[in-house]
Image (cartoon, rainbow, N blue to C red; front, side, top):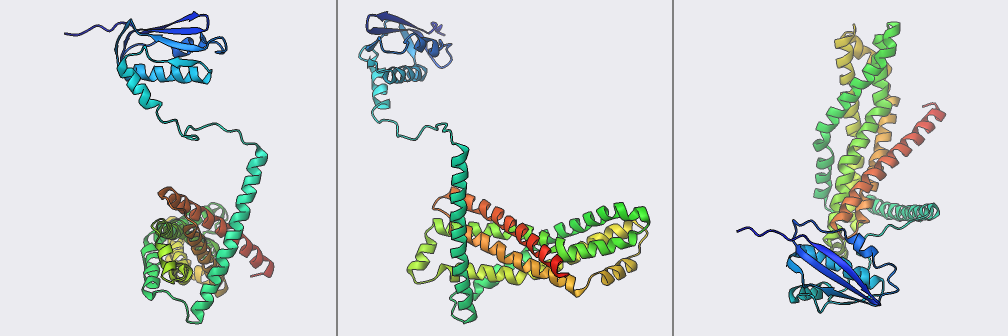
Length: 379
């Protein structure tokens, strides 16, 4: 047999320095309850009241809904300096309230909106930048010592790790390099054809695609892809080892983490990136050929001849050199962020994200500087 719910309500009676809160009706989760803010507004600033008592003579059925409202009411009263007497509440409610207030809330648990001035934001950003620059200089110094030890034949690492890293960042990356390079070649051909077709010079699309891929886009797109693929993987691998205390274990056993973990990854990228750059150049030229031969009145033989005449060894050398530098920067950013990782899973994610961002920033800055230098030198 269903039981009708009695409407829930709260009334406040003010008697001198005493506040009497009368709780009426059924307090169930599906009940319509009064607005507690209106009840609290009757307390005023709380200075004229010293004690709060409850009256539950008209209280019916109740569940956690009543507990939630009582906790708000008691907490508000204590903030106003009003003592609360809970002896008149049912024993079940008293026991639950005792559990709630037995252990005080830990400081700093609640999220607080803190206003930070722009000057403090700029200052903190400057301090973080200084810390990152110092960490980068130290990391480059340690890596340089490891490279010198490698050339002297005194670096301690496993060659199988080097070849495994070459496999991971070389042949395993060919599918994505193929796809992106083909699309970049297609885009360059279509963009160039918009203007060249106005003058009937569609044949020169081969020159545009060949020079653009060999000098700039082949190495740059390869570097961006490898930064998001391999640089992030390096940061995640080393960060996970940091979380599992594996790097500390290596140091305890007498191994230098820079030589044992970082050096094979850096050497693998330095070795693989020029080869990937040449492959990306080839795929971009093929992509340009697909557009030029199929959409314009240019034969495949003419396209190949124009490409051979347009691209010189100097152009290929510039692109390959840039890509090798990009490989060093990708390995540097990925390994550095991985070694700086904290001791939690979220820190691994932050290190991975930071590695990709840092690597792309380094790539763009280095590419800009090398392009300016080549322009000044007439290369």
